[in-house]
Length: 387
Image (cartoon, rainbow, N blue to C red; front, top):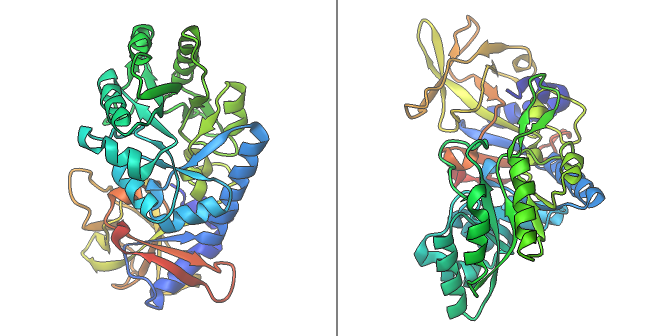
């Protein structure tokens, strides 16, 4: 999906990844991330957010959710993280990162509220239901705390990805607010929805989904109850391109994830975007048969939209040798990928991919590299098996 654009905008990363693999500095099944470019991407995002009056929470699940990269991001201008689930928040917090929003995709379980309040101390917690609000309020009162919360709000026609259903129904929000404001351990300060953007048909811009209208209506309902709406959080494809669009809709908070590595859907089609692609996946040919060359895997993602990969035994030839990928079946474990066989392929050849991924659900290693544009690139942090 991102191979062509990575070659156009960050060919040095492809060369570096190949060199590191050929030299034995990284094994197959490793994502290679250009740390210098990631810092520049984060700085661009921070400047854009400041310009448009938007607060950002950074997301790390796409790149392995490690406190190492969390600290780098915080040092470059985005101060707090999204904890997609409590495990991610725990990992980030253990490395000194600060938690901004917790609970948007995965709600903490009933037994975890006190731990979350005491140890993770998020700025806000996203809630899907009154029942979870009750649990949180009870735990907060026992700790003599009051936790700020934002509500995930949906209506039936909104776009919601499979496996991510849940939230307060817009048509019931008025009655739900009446109940929520009676809970003394929480303070409702905002609303959220996901996703608010989708790639347009022309693939040259982003269009709002109907979810943005849901947010606007939800905000009005909160204000009718004299609640001060401090957060209108509108994640999905948050980037320098989308932030002015968010500002026009009254959004206050965004959550960049793929923009940090220059890999939102729009980044596959436009080379004028502020963020530059900064991530590739490295494998090698394990074995072959008459039709396919099989590549060591563990890092593929079912929605990655892979089309082709580069292969070769050294960095110069690899840049010009390409083979189509065979489909990765989401029904099976990705022990191997497959490329259409070429006569000049050899067992042991390096293979470089660039596709949309979520490293935290893979079995891949992660190598953060500095000096991609120099003659002596260096792996400065190696995260084994994406854990």
